[in-house]
Length: 452
Image 1 (spheres, rainbow, N blue to C red):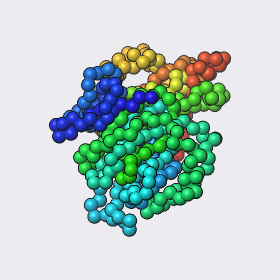
Image 2 (tube, helix red, strand yellow; image 1 turned 90 degrees about the vertical axis):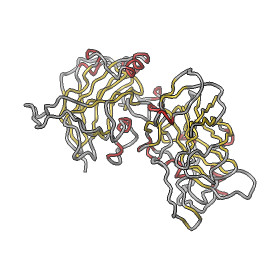
Image 3 (cartoon, rainbow, N blue to C red; image 1 turned 90 degrees about the horizontal axis):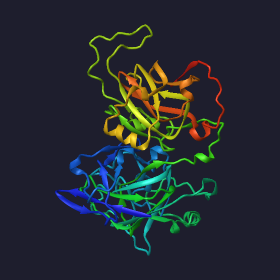
Image 4 (cartoon, helix red, strand yellow; image 1 turned 60 degrees about the vertical axis):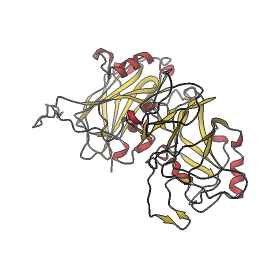
């Protein structure tokens, strides 16, 4: 496996974080945001690196280790000043100048004591989204005088049912790992895990922006990470950037699967507006935690001064907002869920869902063309349908269109507003194409499930 890094542009100078073995070009890197997603950095801050050989679009990557998607710290050798759980917080690190604990300065990250015994510190975490890792962001923001000078990262693909029982960590500040915890974690044999990043020096950067980026060239599926620091010190955040990957061969052909789920590899590949929340949030793990965990657009400025409805109660407005998703696996969609939970005064008036079939090259062309796709390419999966605030809407359709395989789906909301979750349940194409087609009933049913 090959890990490469790149330069960071700071104060007019290029700082090489890790000597690369291959040149890569990045499409506008990102900074942390809510729900494990990343926001764009300005091009002035973008890392510079050699000649262009291929693209890595950070906008299509998810923080697979974030607590917001179920990431969990299993073990750390030491948590004296600040616990390792801070590494996987979804928000950006902060600094409180006058904040102290009984053990020393309060720090928003993982910080171990100054080591006075042989060895080095390390921790093990379980990814919330298991899949292909494309990059790491090792952030040492605010650790200006006590950041870890070197680190390495190892990974493993472990079967959940074969994992040993690891003791719950509880409150860890001021503590070190016990002999019992060392014994339990030793069963994972993490010393032998594959190296995705070899021992590498970290750079502090600016006090509030200490990002160290490392690219990973591996198509293997990973479930667990071991972060080593040499010999001790602090790290604010560890972002494990990649895409989810599901073993579709193990899918029960009789059960629906959420084909757009980010945990399985679904991703937003285009949108019209994301003022208050990225569309990737709505295909996230579990239910939404707040409005910040959804997709919300700005208010459209082309709304008429006085609003009117049609005979079906749908607002008559000229504009709309949209988001396009690449499915985790091509398939047939048979059930759609659109949840507006938490959006009580800013839910869309109505929505529709369409699907299409695109090759990888066609998708790249559509991204460049901002998804100006001929209308006949889109197949209606859900007609224009009225939405209610703070409710889960369930749609079952047996129309002829839903017998077709699609690779991409477009959610359109009118005129604007927010959605907390989108679920597109159905069958992967390899299963669907083998299922006998029955003559579809021209039926459309809608269900509503109120949120508290």
